[in-house]
Image (cartoon, rainbow, N blue to C red; front, side):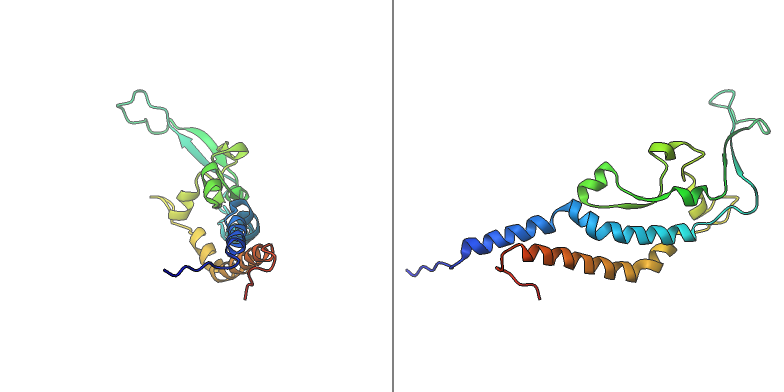
Length: 180
């Protein structure tokens, strides 16, 4: 029986552990790779978001019903909220949620579920109506065009930043590994 033992086995394993710890640090990757790219996409998305130019505001109505089985009477609507021009642009942010933080992801789009953005006169809760249109409003897509416009540059930027994180991890292995 022939047995062999690899010299430096523990040194190599420690080096791999160091690299994996740094590369799998979701907060570091989010901070140094994803967030800089998200800022650029957000800026382009804000630039492409449509602006209300036909009126000083857009009124959203809610009509109370007399009972659950009846239709709401015509002409009895009450103004729920007045949407000002530029409200959608102001609500576009790059943000994370509790669940996306665990996976190391980041969202880019209008905020409307938390903080001051929860108020209907502040948030971008109507983004889907603008993006995809309604029965009375034609669609004005701005999310997908922003993603397509930044796709090439963002992917190159993220690749470069991730390589920088990887090279920092390799440099902490005390010369056990080299990155070429």
